[in-house]
Image (cartoon, rainbow, N blue to C red; front, side):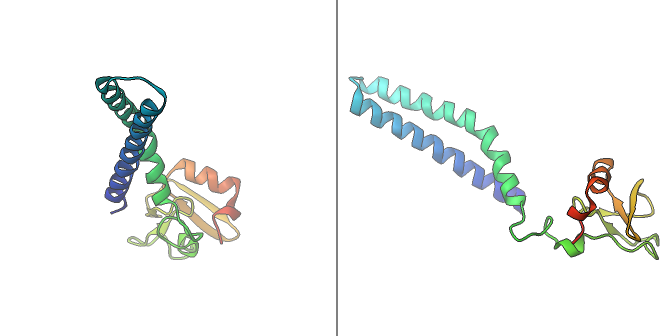
Length: 143
């Protein structure tokens, strides 16, 4: 749902900013210039189009990142406590999933290649990058 929502919000954002820039251009031509109607309309059209071209690839990832960011110390949609991996004892049973403490992704302890032991707990990771991030500063990913 966040994916569709971010598309709508980003489209409204960059379209609104482009329309505002175009309107400001029109206002400036009326206030400080002796332009024909065609020049004003053409200039405003170009300002709108160029603003859309510049803002679309800039605003879309920014909005998506903002919507995916937790606002209350959570990681993804799960609380930090839920991001902790399961204890080593019994965690390799088939069907038991662990949670990558770095990105919050569900990981199968029986098949993943990346894991780390920290203070008696074994943590499992979806990728090498997540393991490396955790190994540098485990305290950042554990409550």
